[in-house]
Image (cartoon, rainbow, N blue to C red; front, top):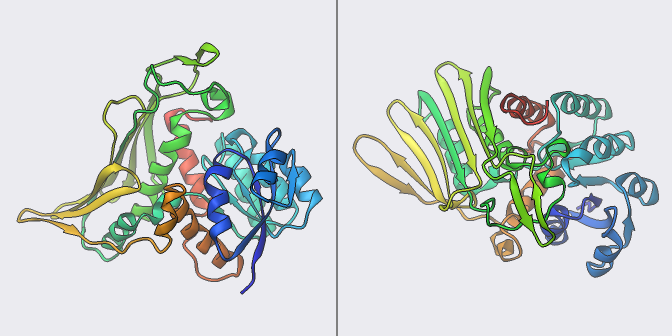
Length: 342
């Protein structure tokens, strides 16, 4: 069994979630970390052999088979194009890009490179999401009419302190549309098994004045994002992500004319799945994640390990369920239609 040498560009989510997922995964060996300021310290702490200030330096400075691009959104394009130019397999974090034009450029470069490429939409691998997809694939909900996904999160309350930086800067790809609506759009497209024919929506800034330990600062990004998608053939999707509510919850429902399936819970990784028709409501038991024991590190880690299973299959040219760059471009178009990027 071949083990792939992989580097990580980005020391935020890349270190908090991707790194532990890769360290626990049998198919990957993390040999390098790239980040402008913290790579040397973090690499030493996590016993990673090499540290670099940039993805470009990492590509030149060590031998890699693959790279996880988990840098901030404004750096995705340059990091990814450098990886593809070097002939590396790439897994890119979401939001894929900050503009449709960049997303198309990245997709074209991947096609030309011919390497395995995917996007980190790990929430497809939540067991209840997989079961819901199976209900759709096997036509248990036909005819499909409506996909409804709502995510309520309290982390952007006006009194909630979060450090200033790129996440609160619109021109650098910050905001909840890129961070979370991207997942919801991908999820809806995945369930529908196609890109929407058209989409409309908007973003909203409820709390532009924020506070961190240094005092007040102005946020230029959205703390709520909302989209309506039309897939044709009578199917629509209604998506909402909200960062300012007191309540926290997640609902993903697929409604047919005769039956609905609803996954609901406190957050996107902790849900129960129900089927509903005119006669009864039934809860479906779902098989636990194979890497469930790693959830104590970070709730995303078991899902990312599933994603890296698919990445390894893609590298080896085997059938796989890796979210694709083509699908990422479709998601980017929807994000643009609600005001994220261009």
